[in-house]
Amino acid sequence: MGTSDGRVHRGRVRSWLVDDGWGVVESADFADPIWVHYSTVTGVPPGEFRQLQVDGEVELTVEHAEQDEFRLRAIWVRSI
Image (cartoon, rainbow, N blue to C red; front, side, top):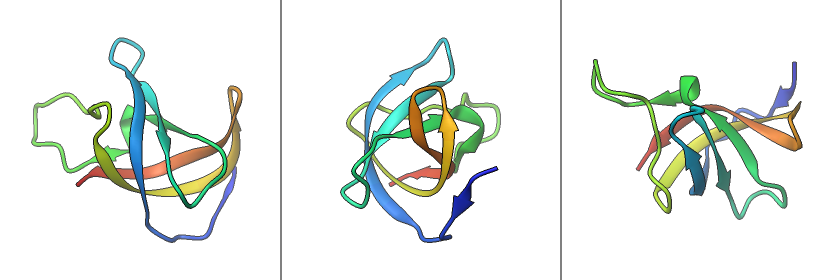
């Protein structure tokens, strides 16, 4: 399990793979891109698929963790 500072950061969705349920967010607060899984996306109306829009702005909390080739992983994400 990774470690998180608990802070809420802002970022922009760089990519989102609908069929795979994950994507990548970039934030000025971090040098590395952030891996995001659909299960961490909140604020979606019941019955709708959890996904993010490319180029959309988000708020997120992040942990340091190895996920595929990524060193950062989102643990909570919300579109703004």
